[in-house]
Length: 365
Image 1 (spheres, rainbow, N blue to C red):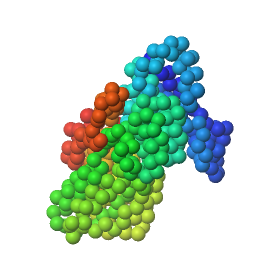
Image 2: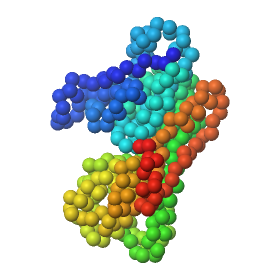
Image 3: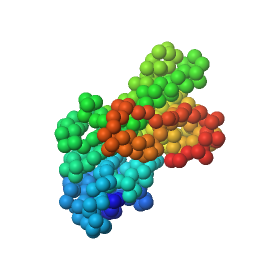
Image 4: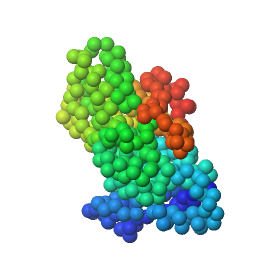
């Protein structure tokens, strides 16, 4: 039996009062069906205390009973949880939609938890999934470090953990497998393209990195720098973190412009969202984006439009978020007691501006 996932928003009174100074009393968690609109993390509460993350064991029993008195049939459906790292827009929204549309069916007893960009929220949600005796917990970790203890607890409880999108630094024996992008290769592909594009010309580069400790940030940084530093014609003027965030990218790009001015030749952003912030900053300062080589990662439809629009973006390295169907294949094997590959990569492409017009109709996010 499909679990009835109620559109339950658990927040404190202060979260209803709008923006306030200081920290709020608690995080909030949206447990929702795939048919509902995906909201941004900014629309959820935040603060320094974690409460009510995910559905508790007792509350989920109550929901199941209210939606269907036949509890015996619900026990046959695999109990699957998906804990994302943040319910953002663009790429992360596409991942959440892909997972929810795949697992929010009669075939699964499914629970979705928004990680809200907070490590503490994910840990609490993991503990709730373990208490619920989940068959499989699909986790998109906000950072690589710090999951050892909760993964050990899941293993001891017989809950299989499957990592989606990002990785963890914990021992591989603590999780069944991982599905996602080869972030290191993404960085290398961006670097190799730039080497070919430069044709030996000296170029100065600024980089807007993603969130510290995230697999995407680490891999894209390492892969790109490995290629660039082999070529003496390139110089990285600065590489700072803007946390995959548009507003922070705008602030950082303004800082780069103030400090380096016309010395900048190449702008690299670790995701499309930051790329939008960079272009907005350039326009606000009456600077033509075409004055630079701009490289981005992810492959959202919006960035393809920018590539078509007078090549404001020159290269986009795809990071495929449509992981639901492939994840389901691994989940089915785990539930059946089969062994799965520890590392699983999704297919991805590298797109230049002259390829954008033909590819744009194929973008699903």
